[in-house]
Image 1: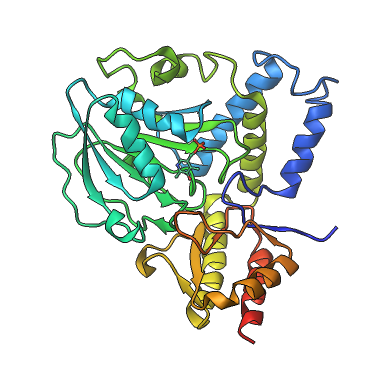
Image 2: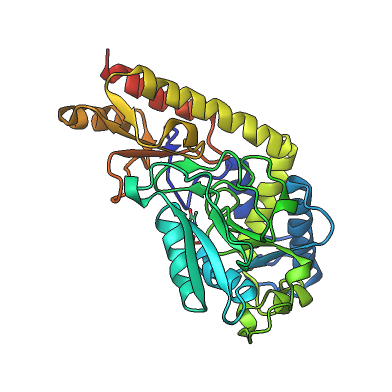
Length: 354
Ligand SMILES: *Cc1c(COP(=O)(O)O)cnc(C)c1O
């Protein structure tokens, strides 16, 4: 079978090696002659997996002392609510930067719990840039950011430096570049973009905030409840955690986050170069805020659409359709995407102008 170049925005590509190991564990896990799908989450074999997964996060992201790593359920969409529940005080105000669809959803959830001050927004230009130079009131409970805007193709190159705690949704660029974890009180990420399969959400939470908010928090949304039980307050998503662990082992072996970042630079510069050099394509995002993970672009001449769609389909490129709120094309290039896949796409783009 011909290789499919998977540019899907999420759930997305994972390394073949990880798929093979994951498949084997469905039949026989840890030489138990049992499937990973049928063992207890309290069995020593799985407790070991959970411990290793948490350790790998710490190693890959150089998480400093004083932080707890959790693997929970509910997706980043639950993270929107959960982070507000744990950080927004009764009567307090939270600051949000509105950089697109996901940020908006986070704002909506926080509004259920208190006052939201949208301190900056790029909605005036359909979210094609990252707002900069804004002020955050010093009495805000926190500032919420979205590090990479999956749909619009923008990404913070530098995070704003502020005096209040920072919460960041890193769903679509975690493990693709170095971050200074100490700058954040909560980092969260749905697994299915850069970490593993859908079904688990990674949280990196500063210990200081655990149990600090005086409002009453439902157990499943309370970081302290989960931290006290080592992510095993209820049945954890055993298989997604296992596959995420395998993928983190793979990333570590491949050179860790630094190697992922080099590869991301290489992929992105190859694709953006063609977008900029070709008279037939135009990037959507402001050049200085371009995402290395999700590249959004449009045709300058719509009459070429049929021809281009045929070319990339013939090249076995998959998942290139843009999100309905942006149109055009979106190439999502997560960690496991090989540079050769980007070459295949760029060759199809070159053929269009030859
Ligand atoms: C995909 C995505 C989400 C939504 O994640 P779910 O796990 O589906 O809830 C949130 N934020 C960002 C930045 C995303 O890319």
